[in-house]
Image 1: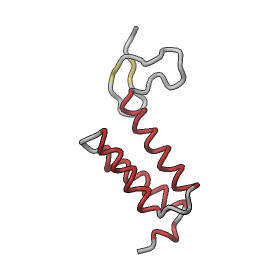
Image 2: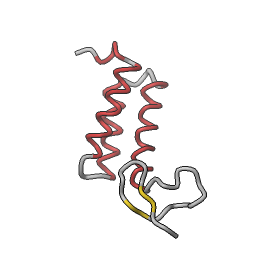
Image 3: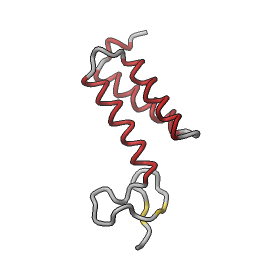
Image 4: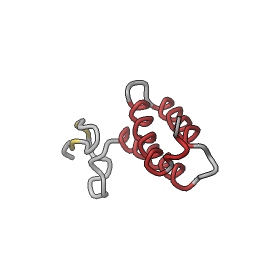
Length: 92
């Protein structure tokens, strides 16, 4: 099996499943993508939960898996999503 370059982080790794779509994404990046997808879903579809609460919860989840810059990245991306889909709720 040959090594692949991850589509998200640029690291070289062995493919998870060579024939699967997205096989060139490493497990860490798949986890990060799952956190972002779930957080974005809540921001768009769960209007009963304040956006800051959603963002905080998913940043805490990221802290459970990562100890470097990933939680900050998750915070940044979800904040941007929230500002696009629920701008009135984020006015200071």
